[in-house]
Amino acid sequence: HVLFIDKGSNDNVKEGDTFYVVRRRDDFIRGAKDDPMLPAYVIGRVMVVKVRETSSTVVITDSAQSIAIGDHVSQNLD
Image 1: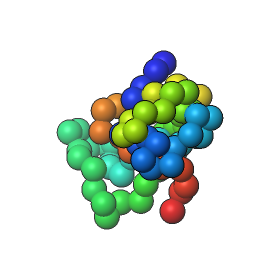
Image 2: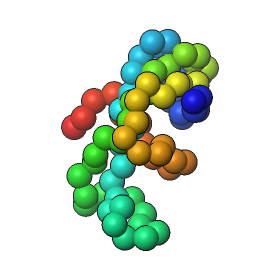
Image 3: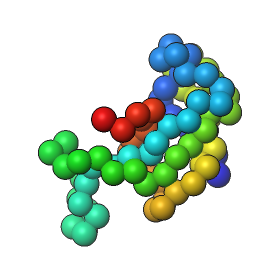
Image 4: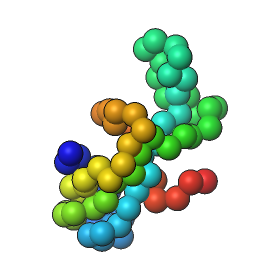
């Protein structure tokens, strides 16, 4: 599957870079929204295949859950 992220060459993103897809919400609560007080957990990984100034096209390399609009991407897990 192909996705678009809001990071691009202005953020030093290059083709071949990988990102973790992370969430910060309690999935056991229906309709829960992101909560910055909760730890981020990885739900998948993506790889950049095309870079523009402010966005990039990525492909999903693996996922443990469905990736949804609003999930976040990060190159490291801090």
